[in-house]
Length: 351
Image: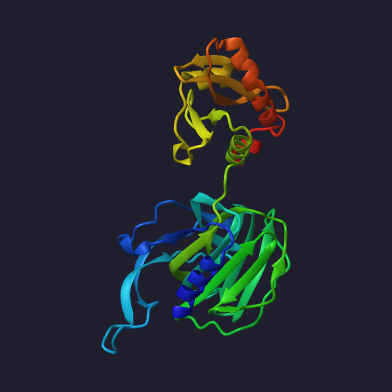
């Protein structure tokens, strides 16, 4: 069982880009509780599954320090407990708080019960309940399979026949880099690297089939954080425009009459609410000028392909004696035009 832990660390250390890591820690949840941050759904026919925390004995990932140290402990794990025997029924527990592009995921799973099926797996780069990749193990069929679902239709099934005993913890792993997909079972690559470009990013979900009762634990994702496109645009402009003191982009917030910051020199500010000026610029398309003691700020609209304001660009520049609104707007206009040239819709800023 130690292979999973070492494999995650090795892949993380080998990454060429700064990586982030997310761990689903079910050990802090109470028995019977549904894990926060997830949404229960179902692909195919039938109702969403019954996902909740149960207690189970789990072998340690670490080598015991002494022969007397316990190698197995009883602790909270995630379980899918519903037993809907419908054949084309795929309970999904979708993690809603992040979209992943390139990532390495590892988890341990155990198939526990089921008459029609005993399956457990991970759906990934999930767009919705009808579009995703899935990697799953079957204890009744003794198979380890990959396939994709497009508009609810299952594609070609790939993978070997291999014993996957029920009632035993196993390790599942999947790595996505661009259009390359690698699949692992118990620390070993299960079949040659796959190439598929159907989905470049998406959500992660725990997956089962039919009446399968399955458990999951020790789930980790090492991933390349996805940068909002607006942030990349701002960083590049700030690199070229040395005299710019700052450049920020705001879009409409989730609540009415609010805005939120999606790009800034200071990335810790991202997500912060904008003020009345940004709200007015997006609503009316007007230009605003603010003169400070050491800076001149112009807030201008960014428009979609139809000319409708979709964002507000706050351009913060050095000032000089005799600075006027007119020449401040003249100075800011080429900067905003360079942004505008790369924007045709709101998705070009936030997707």
